[in-house]
Image (cartoon, rainbow, N blue to C red; front, side):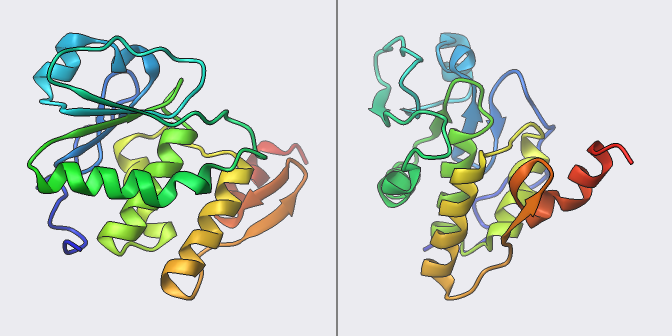
Length: 188
């Protein structure tokens, strides 16, 4: 396991929502359109693309390895079945001095959730810290409630404790880190 901050860029990267968002020195998140942009892939030296969707087809480019994680963006989808295998693959690519692009359709829910799982497993980050960091790099991340529940369980499995929990709100079950934001959205 690498130390928590050794793989992170020296400076916090400029947040990106359209192109590739750099999370660590070797991990990026994007949407499906950006993931099929040869110029973006080559200029960021991407060697592995992990497609976490059933609806986005990849354009296959030479010298890039592709992994398909066929999961829909639905709270009942078992994304946790892929937490370890995807985290292990990202870590393996990093150890080989490669770079991974993790993408789903929008780069908001599925790819973000797998990114959080990776940061917890290989950078020993709490779920709260992994979320805070990833959101600073890609402000639009927002895993669905089912993925949050799975991430909370994964954090407990990895560390024996949780740094966040699910709570009931007028908008349904949400992670407690969204409580303040949700209150601002509900009219008085």
